[in-house]
Amino acid sequence: MRDPRVFPAQRRRERREDEPRTHRVNLRLGDDELAAVQAGATLAGLTPASYAARTVVAVAMGTLTPIPTTYREELRELVDARTALTRLGSNLNQIAKVLNSGGDITREQLDAVLERVGEAVRRVDEATIVNMRRRRPGPPAG
Image 1 (cartoon, rainbow, N blue to C red):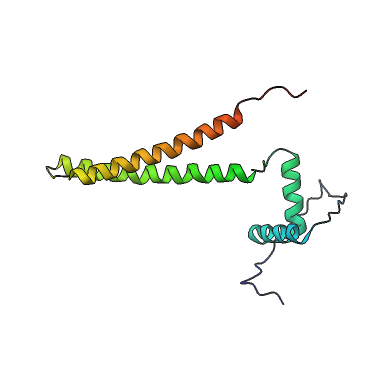
Image 2 (spheres, rainbow, N blue to C red; image 1 turned 90 degrees about the vertical axis):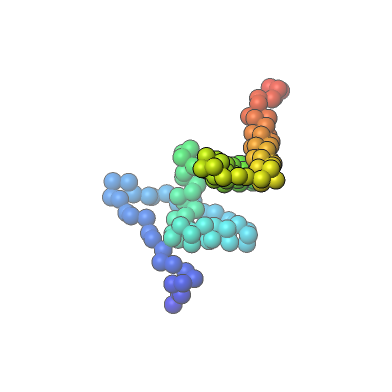
């Protein structure tokens, strides 16, 4: 019996009488590929076959676009930079609140926040430049 803590209940695709699946495609996978499919299926709560079918069909029909690893890293950098900017915005709001209520902020505190703002903006700029260079059309193949 499968341990439900390790192997959550898997869902089967609901059968539809108006769209029966009559065709079969067989796949051969390496150990690493099979492990990746099984992990994805477990996270999605599907059987490996259902997960593979759903993913392949979604990619083929254009409703799912795979992201290369390098894009994921750039996306992660943009998300991290956005998070940093959000936190810095909160810091700036706190400084403004203190100053507006007659309080004092030391020059060191203000410089530290402004340094972090500059670094976060540089990170966003760098990620944006990399993204723009990739999107720039190259010379025609030929």
